[in-house]
Image: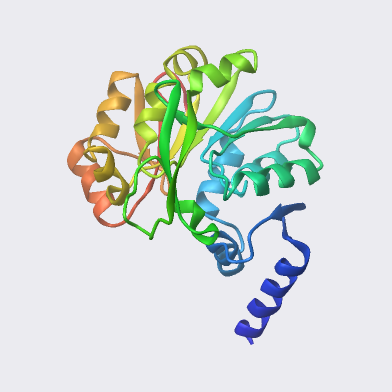
Length: 265
């Protein structure tokens, strides 16, 4: 019975080009693994989504870096009518769908989309592409998690520059999922972090870090140097040292929360 339901859902996606999600239409390639996860889980990365909806404060902005189809942006916007968003996605396999989702949404006046790769410098970088179904694994390095089909050049920009372009708004939340380049995003957001002191949710997994020459404990070092505390996102438990962080990564915990020392959860 479940196979029949899944088959019908895929036929509908092929026919319409989108699927319903939090009252919006998510435009998607029919072979997307993200759509498959939504069908299986109901809510994509449910815990991350719930945390984001809670941490995005009214009358502020949130930045979704590595937005892909918009599955993390849409729930926040749908359930927080006084929040504005900037969703950033460089991949030509994903951005056209993200843009169509934004245009068709009821909150498009609060939602901006940017087609650039976020890094610590402004310039041009190689960007590796998979097939459209596996676009969630694309990035500035080939991490080896899926087969890549080709390499293109994309424009890079620091998050600080994007923040300035939008008038230096008050940002309460940043979510980062860029397949190993998370530290580059953070390094390019020094002014934003200093002024706004946002909460930061990010993916951090050894499967991606090796391609960037990073160690698991580098995240803890970054947090300490910038006046942040590091938490396990799922259980909201503090991570006191590198050994604890390495243990969590070994048991496949991938999502973490950075909280400013001067702010309570």
